[in-house]
Length: 351
Ligand code: AHM
Ligand code: MG
Image (tube, rainbow, N blue to C red):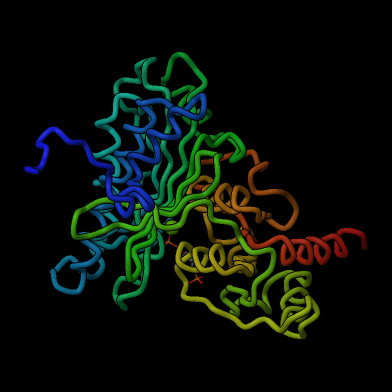
């Protein structure tokens, strides 16, 4: 019998068992399942994915082009800005300001928040970010990253009188947050409060593909991560805590891992467990890391993955920011490491 040209056949199962899910598909799915995740929100996130694809392309060529090295410009933190920092900032500002839902942008590289779309009432979101964290690693081919935090705007009118207050929201108010790590591969780790999901960039097709669904931070790990050179100059509770990790008092002897790039150091901590610390010290009494665009997104991701984050006294996400570039000590890790850290801090405040 000749084959029936109108016959319908089943899809091959190998094509439907493990579908490839891009970040855009993931957001569409979330949009259907959760109130508050809208089309315009997905469009906003696509501004971040576009910018970070552009940044990663430049980072990958850093050793080849004359962009490598310091531009000789000092940023608002008094540190030498590198050309890639400037480029990364411009890409974030450019991509996000093209999204109608963005009312304001605040960046590590800009002293003041930037108003977008004239503060139009239709622009509901504020995005706060560090466009290129750990940039001193670029010269040595180390991992760097971008952190971001998305906030909802509260005021109807946005003018210079209310702009700073709008940005100064506690971390628990974040609508979504995450980071991109530019390492051996480029990975986006994101949460809108419905689990933490990791998307690896497929450079051949330029798509972030879901590679790490529903990331959970192990309750304990085997590494601690901090710049130990400052430990002697940090409060006693931090020194006692690290000594306990060395002695194996938490049930295992911890080894240390630190590359001085918060996103890369945290990313390892998130995936395989442990604790990351940037304590206060005599040189940096408030620590070094910035609350709004470094500690808050990291704390948001850690909590939604089952870990926690503290400044030594409070939950990071409860801190009311007082200024845009405010610094904070940061300790973030798995449940067991954080319980032991908090016990050590409590012992100090009891005396
Ligand atoms: P940056 O925003 O200027 O790059 O500084 C932040 C970086 C973090 O990525 C990292 O955790 C820390 O600085 C390292 O600081 P230190 O060299 O004091 O250990
Ligand atoms: Mg930074």
